[in-house]
Length: 313
Ligand code: GLV
Ligand code: MG
Image 1 (tube, rainbow, N blue to C red):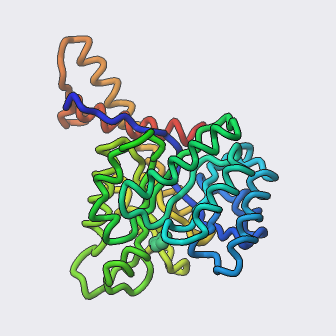
Image 2 (image 1 turned 120 degrees about the horizontal axis):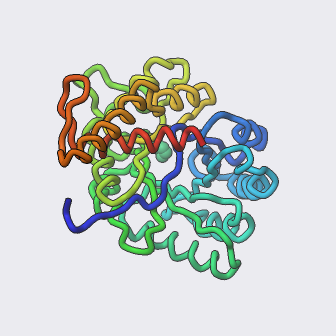
């Protein structure tokens, strides 16, 4: 290992993240009772300009009235982008009036580390002024060409280590790059393979280098569960911990794909036991089921066991 190491900033179960428009209180109530690990209440693109203020009020009320923790949910608010005049009031109103109930803020269309810095400074001031007992985390959507061009710099944690996850927002990313798409997050048959591979792969590496979680964004066709599953599996293979659900039917699919199967958990535990036994005999490597295992296998196995423990909580 390098002497320079970034430990995970925050560990949270985030297999499924349900997107829920702040303008729709009925959907917010249903989201709280869903099986999603994470819910983000949206003030950005799912809310029309004329509804932004009411959506803010709905979200503040829902954060205060619903016991999200008791319902096993991590709750986040997606604020508007820094290029809008909504953003400062989103942060001020939501954090001042419901900050103690809020786990994270999701910042859309992050292009440079300064975008994170601005929200970070505002949140830190409000937390202090209001003497909030909790520390609100930040998450950033990488969904523009400039965001992806700067993704390592954004992930680098320049400031107070409040940034804990990056999300790949494929819809805006496609728009920003003028990629030819057929369905949000889907594959274009004109491309021989997965046209999102390079982007997700780059974001995951940036995340893991600097201790962040990597989350895959939306898949638009909720009538095509098989395509959702295929996309989620591709993201999981690359190292993402979860994926958005833009429809309640996608929650169970994400929970399934991002939970390690029992056989994998079992094998991970056996790897750790076999390596412990080898270590007791002064050996660094061992053999399990006819395959060589060593310290790198132990690190991979620990990742699997930790996720299984989080799910079991
Ligand atoms: C999400 O916000 C996206 O643009 O995909
Ligand atoms: Mg977007």
